[in-house]
Image (tube, rainbow, N blue to C red; front, side, top):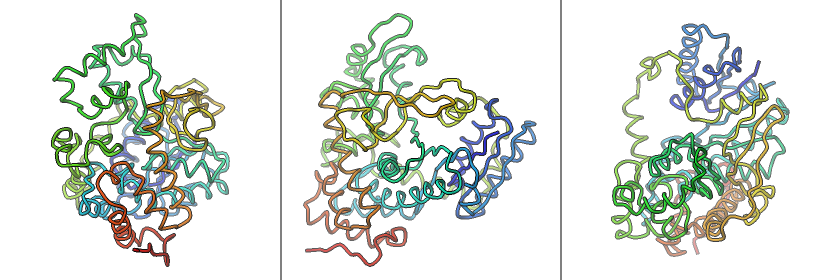
Length: 442
């Protein structure tokens, strides 16, 4: 049965979700789950918890943990990457330093200065994991959950021929919202969604049962105050660009220049409760969780009862590869002609079919030109960030920040250069590729 390595298994909440999904999947009975993280305390907690789950639910699976990545990878069939390099300390610099320059981020993990610097920290580690896989488990599939998804997967596409896919839950959670907005059960919605991670477009929405086009209903309903107030930024983008997008007001407001670049814009569009758009929502939430569970065995409080699987795609992909039963999802892959008006080799999020033979992305063709233009504004930044992460070129980091839609709406080039230099200095211990290379300030 499958040997499944989870790299970054110190993430107690998310690793628990993925592992419980695997244990809930009949086709994956008998799996060997290998947990790897750089530090031991949380890893031991996770191993102990999953052993209790296996024993109390009489599962055939096995689980073990290690701080040796190569040991976890040796002979693996599937490698799931959930790392966060630098943790909460680096995240604090990602949020606080740009804020001092007027760049107000809500989430800060995908684009903006926060997303760029997370890419600089994460890409070299994920590329190293792929290199180890080529040596130790060359037939394995890499499943990436590490953010920022698009530049990480872009770099993987440049640096390895291993089969890989990047997973997010933006499409399935947005479908829940669209179901409510169109009064249509989610499982009855036939959809085509494509673009880039956190900025994919619902290009087609139909009721499978009646054949009714749901797009006009969605366009009408977002104009109603009770719908519009719930998700101002996405509704506003649909008003002006014609299509509804994955991800929330908090995320999307960071990827474009119109909603966070001034106090007036913030007050108009980003005044929602937590994760709705306010400043530092995700960082502040992470700090609260860290304080709440500090010194506490969080998993000791959790139920070991196995319930139905979560909305995460991972276990369904493994099931399809093991059984051959076809599973369709939206995944992040290298753009080998799947979206024809975005650059070859960038990372795109498109429909993907999975079976025993592997991953089969679908060709979408051209996006509506205005949608491709918005995506391209982010792809340009992602490419600069990925190149900077791999080469250690500080000038390219500054240029990525300068091309970022939100940063360029808030700062002069001189300010962006100063901000970049300050962030490179603050995060130096997580950025070894820049050692000895300083950004010039004139």
